Amino acid sequence: MRSWARAALLVVAACATPVVAPEVTPGSTPSSEPATPTTEPAAPTSFPPPPSVPDGPVDATVETALADMAASVFSTSFNTLGLSTIANGDDPRAGWVLADLMRFYQGAGTGGELELAFSRLTGAQPDPSELGFVWAFNHLIAWDLPAWDGYADIKRQIYTSVDQRWDPFFAEDHGVDWRLITWGGVFADDRPLGDNGPCSCIPSLDNPGTTDALGGSWYDDDRIVFGVVVNGKALALPIHQMEVHEMVNLTLGGRGLGIPYCTLCGSAQAYFTDNVEGVDRVVLRTSGLLSRSNKLMYDLTTGSAIDTFTGTALTGPLGGRGVILEQVSVVASTWGDWKAAHPDTLILAEDGGIGRFYDDNPLGDRDEFGPIFPVGDVDPRLPVQEKVVGVISPDGTPLAFPVNQVKDALSEAGGSLVFEGLTVRLVDSVRIFDESGGELVTHEAFWFAWSQFHPTTTLWTPLTD
Image (cartoon, rainbow, N blue to C red; front, side):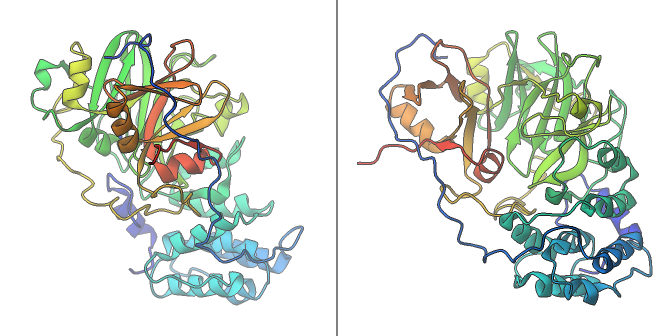
């Protein structure tokens, strides 16, 4: 792969997916406890020990060399003359900027020079099976290597050269860990609410067309939908449409909802967008940035970046106020099971209500071999891409249930079991209730994603003979 110039970035960003550069009643009687919690992940074994890191600021000569490269990024005279100064500077923290640059300069030539400098600086040995930036970031994240006070300023120079619309995230930062941020291969979606036209972005779908269950006969019963219920009104979102849009803004049951789907994490979530004080309506958009392979969304109304996995605002006015968006459960189900449990459900129209054709499998086999963007070390208790149903218990404990295993256990247990004081039931999919019978918010995700964002999670495992 040749080094990427500015014109190449425009071509790559036009893609719709990131480039390598998702009835039992609460009163029924549950079964006995079927499993013992697993709370401690095994020690990581896939990365060497971290290099030693000096205290205080980065050496002025090294920081000047880093800043010079950032200032010339995407120019025809990209300045790599300072690489030897950086590589010999004995400060592995500079590796964060080298990894950032490797995201945009890959393969032989400049990319190879950056990889070599990173290897000399950190002692990490390149992996020919991985893209350079993935290899570099995975080591840095696994080591939890600290940055320094000036790192965000240099990263800002690089990233705003790609898309100036990211600059407000740097300008009003209330909790971004810039070490973990990488480019997902597309630009920010800044179209106004209701504009479903084309863009150089992953295009959110606003106010989509829907039909009743009978009108959804175009969608096969064995195919996957993401299901949401608000105030008794049910909606199914077919997975192949969500793989194209990755974000839907709509009204359901009289409430405003934003529904992001991170294809890289296998995680569909739903957030109320009409109850944030001082904002008439939060409008969720895809930023084009990622954090540990999870899309970073933002609110178009206030320009605030929001952690997609937790709903926590990180920048802008919402970040300054400590806003955390309220979630509602999203279940992954077959269309047949969903409409059997919710016969009055709506489903997105076949054309999304915008006259679009949707390929049955737009992502192909992209996610068959694990994360394609950096995640660092992974919790070894489950395979990285295994689907889990995640929930936060009333006492704040994160819990995860491997989908296939817990469904098998529920079928054997008559549809209900108890774990950590919570009742787990098989309805349209796996649903979880507290001791008073109230349903808790859940969503499915790949194990690597759930465990990255909830590293202290308790993992349900079935009993073995």
